[in-house]
Structures are given as structure tokens and as C-alpha cells.
Length: 315
Picture 1 (spheres, one colour):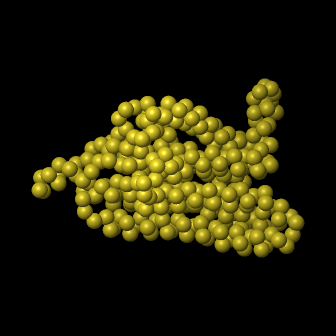
Picture 2 (picture 1 turned 135 degrees about the horizontal axis):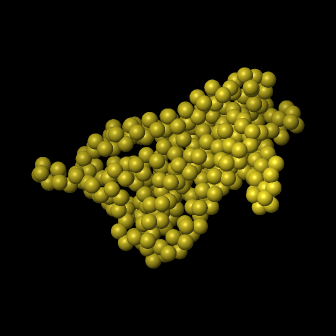
Picture 3 (picture 1 turned 30 degrees about the horizontal axis):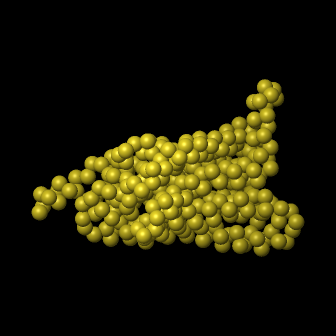
């Protein structure tokens, strides 16, 4: 029995079975993904380049928007190239190490979204509620600490989850998703996953706590902004896009958490796949569009950048 367990736990390759029932549409899916992924990369790179190249945008709010777009590129890079390959392949497999790397990239990116939106909420709070103190509070050193917080917390949290995951003895190799996911791998364990579950829920609650904190701060901001026309304009211009981005990523993360733990196999695979992919489909394209189209100064600089390229004029 011990020998059999040792053989079954030496999993070197996982099978991803999320595409099994939709392979007849793989060329359609490949075409759509091959169009969508470059578009998403283009939108994010455009916002990042615009912010980096124009000194007018070297302000805390725009630096954090840039960070949000960089994170969007980072997270989707862990899924789309592999997904495109799987759509053209008959065997949908991923190595054990590749699986852990994919988990790290995708899920640290989700948590980084929450962290970035949290520091953006703090930035808006200081800008609207304490405008005279804004430049003394939001110094370059403070911005650097905020960016470090955005990345370090998620990296540490997911690293611990992966360490806990790697210590599990596995009795299976089939993952019923399009990509590797922490809970999907943990369910393959031969023994108890209590420690993994407890720490996983601590991480989930901590980052959902970020969302609650942001919503509470925005209730305070709404009360503050109602007192003046200028305050209402500033809120609509800079805070509403932030709220849309927050609702978007929170709903997407909630879908993934609920689906991976409590999802029913009776739901059609296409629906299950969409629910599992929502946070990799919507936030990465919506964030650059929200900020690129809604923030006047960003929109103007983007238009100016492309106009100059097309017309070949210089400043």
C-alpha cells in the first residue's frame, strides 16, 4: 500500500480537462483568443507607455494606474500563451513545476489588483479630503512603498500557499479546469488539506477585507464630495473608474473562489469555463479602457501620441 501511494503521489504532469467538451469549437476559440489577447496587451502597453513618456502623468494616481496595467500583463501572461497552445493541441497537459508557476503568476496577479486598488483609494482619500497635505504625504518614497506593498504582499501570500501545496501527497493528476488552480490541485491530495484550507481562507478574507475597506473609504469620500461642485467633479472623474475596477475584480475573484470550491459539475462546461476565466477576461481589458477613456488627460495624451506617430510630426 505504501509503495502504491508513493507511485501515485509522484505526479510529474497534470491533465487539464477544461477543454474536453468544447474541442469541436477550438478553432473558433483560438481565433477569438488570438484577437483578444494582442488587443488586451496593446491597450495595457498603450496606457503604460503614455504614462511613462509624459511628465504631466508622473503623479501618484497615474503611477498606480500604470502599475495596474503592468499587473494585468503579468497575470494574463500566465494563462493565454498556454491556452492558445492547448487549443491547437490534442493533449492538454502541464508539468508539475509549470503548474505551480502558473498558479503563482495568475493568483499573485489577482491579489496585486486588490492591493493596487487599495493604495489608489488611499491616494484619492488624501487628494480629496486633505488636498493641502497631498504633496507632503504622497512623496516619491511613499509611492515606492505603496508599489512595494502592491507586489510584496501577494508574492509572499501565494508563495506560502504554493509551499503548502507542494508538501501534499497527490493521488491524482486530472485538473478539471483550463489552467492550474490552488484548490483544484489541493483536491487531489491523498490526505487532509486543513492547513492549506485555513491559510487559503485567511488570504481570501484578507484581500476581500481590502475591498470592504475601499468601499468604506468611498462612502466617506461621497459624503465629503457632496459639499462642493469641484469635489463632485473630482469624484466622478477619478473615483468612479476606480469603483468600477474594484467591483469588476471583486466579482471576478468571488466567481473563481465560489466556483472552484462549490461549483456543480451539472453546470455545462462552457459556463463553468467562463466563470473560471472571468477575472482573466474582463479586468485586464476593462482597466486600461476605463482609465484611458474616462481620464481626460490620459485620453488626450494617448490621442496625441498616436496622432504624432501617424502624421510623423515632432514636438
